[in-house]
Amino acid sequence: AVAILMLVLGESRWVAELVLPLPTLLLAYSLARFFGRLYGAKTGVAATLLALAFPVSLINGRHYFLEHPEAALFAASCSALLDGAMLRFGLLAGLTSLSRMGAPALLVGPSVVALAVILREPRPWPRVARFAASAALAFGMAATWYGPNFGSILGHVSFATESPDAVLFIPMQGAGGWEGPAYYLRWIVQEGPGVPMAIAGAVAFLWGRSLRSPVIAAVLVAFAIHFLLLLRATQMVRARYILPLMPAVALLVVRAVASVPSRAGRIGLGAVVAAAG
Image (cartoon, helix red, strand yellow):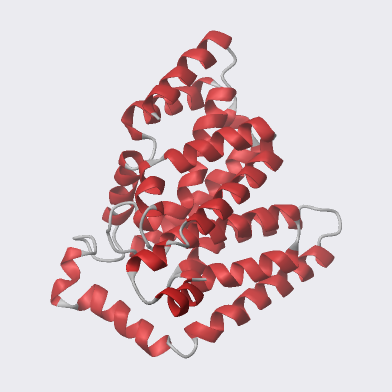
């Protein structure tokens, strides 16, 4: 879309930003569909609106950052995976992988959780084969860019982690340390729910029945796989790189408040979330 507009209107930043509503609409539709399938339309709409209202979404959605379409394609991939539409998942996972260097790492958590669920079925192997075929399709699509540019990617990684300027982007402990996850956890709160909403969500999470929900457990596992294992090697640039995972935070907040057994508690904590948002 950007290329077509630039051919017609010329090359400029404002022309590129004309397409920004497209990934925003795809993100909103995919999140509402994904969350709605998990918990119903009301939760789907509430969690989607909250995710789109996070500062990290508003900031990056107004500028031509690759993380914005990456988040939209990732959400669409997760929705297709939940639907069991493996051909659609393979195509969208391939597009997600091509949206930004390193984007394939996002797909690890949901894929591991989905495969674990499939393997619990009485006859899992036909679905495992379909999943493997979709993964092969995504891999083949991603290889069209990562293959020819593999040397350049290694050079970029080396520059970002070993050059004199690397200290500006990676944790003081190095790319494999735990300072990076701590850094991102701080920015998840600051550019996500904020401190008041985060406290309200934590209270609701401990008070309610969220801890006993297998769906929430699956979301937490998928989030943890990416956050605790894969982001250890990520450069430190505030919350931009974590943008595709922020809808999971919104879902956790909404479901935590909804699961509080006391009506007064739900109203009070919901009011805090609404005011903080």
